[in-house]
Image (cartoon, rainbow over all chains, first blue to last red):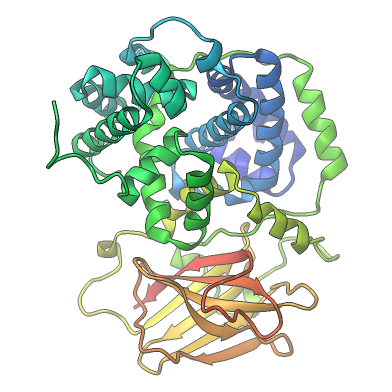
Length: 182
Length: 268
């Protein structure tokens, strides 16, 4: 019975062209994916178009998902994120170009009381993000969460693009040293 | 604070992989990275690792209900474009116990009629540098290349098998490697060769370029290839199949889309 399937089961069924499973998958995951896309695209209308693209891709590529590649939601979220970034790069729009306001980097890592739990994972990222210099952390988080490009980061921080690229690398490097390899 | 001695090399492939996941590469850099993902398993792993490390940042996104008009559009689009089966192969089955002993043990995943496989369209898809194809390839890398310790207990085994898969439960090819004899045997089950093309079989190893093992024979179900190179087969390796012009690639590397892939599993 599809209602009791977990996301991985649903993806397997979608791979076999099960429309009911696909509808259920959408029901259960679309709000989260839409949230990820909106955070990057800014514009809800465009975000809706991107969401359509994402689920069309999911329909066509569900056979590529394998549990050993990670959690289903992570796989879906990656598709959504990449599609959103693709879109804002094409159009030049997005949160970064129109968005205002500072986000404390750690606010963007969810409150640990909410959502699915893998305590060590989340704590590890929080702790390690904390270890980064502020500018490095902000660059990494703004890029990942809101789709900032190097140019947009450079504008925001009033630095040359080359500097921002170095910041990104230092931030990534520090994260890797802190978190290790999955 | 400058860190001349500890700054990461800007050309470090791992930094490339990290920026790939962040989305901060330039279009040219990303196009190069997309191509690299197709042929470089280490790079795929690096990207997959960064995806895993950073994925918790997704949790911070507030869920937002999409407009109710979105779902019907998706539904209708699928109605218009539905193909009978998965239209993108490329998933290796890593668990040894799902590899059948006999070809006759396999049952078709789909009933009757040929799958409509549009290779020209697929080749175009591959040429378009989109995040999604690469990200999925990167996701696959996590299970394509397992830790060596899960395989070796004692001296390295001499025989390997790979179920080269299109996804789902029906492998397209079953590849056996006998390293002692240098023999590679390929059993074709539901492999599809497009017209006027050959399927070429590659030995994919970490840290280096793929090595061609030869072409899949289309007239018989079993192709026997003798490995011409002295290259050894290890459990981190994979077998890939690309679509080439008749006669195969002349460049020494896949020139066409890689349509199947599977990982070598040691047989004790």
